[in-house]
Amino acid sequence: MSFQSRNRLTLEQDLFATPAVAVTPPPSFRQRLAVTIAVWRERTMARRCLAAMDARSLRDAGISPAAAAFEAGRPFWQRLGGLR
Image (tube, rainbow, N blue to C red; front, side, top):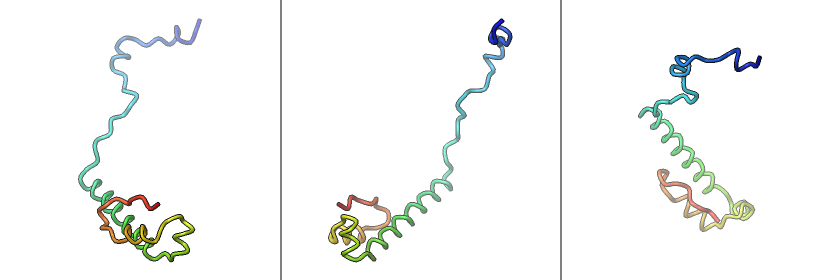
């Protein structure tokens, strides 16, 4: 006798089984706001660090000083652009 034949599910158990994938509710306004503020703070810090780098460090990273100056001058709500 096989395992399946000994442990058959009834039709009612199949109909009322819990789904395999749990549905999560969408994030609340407060959660979205917290994530947005965290991203903005990260962009601000990245741009400050980029502005503080000297020309030699920028060359080592493969970033032109002009691209670094342009990116450092952008506002925090804009995404980081390509620096190469």
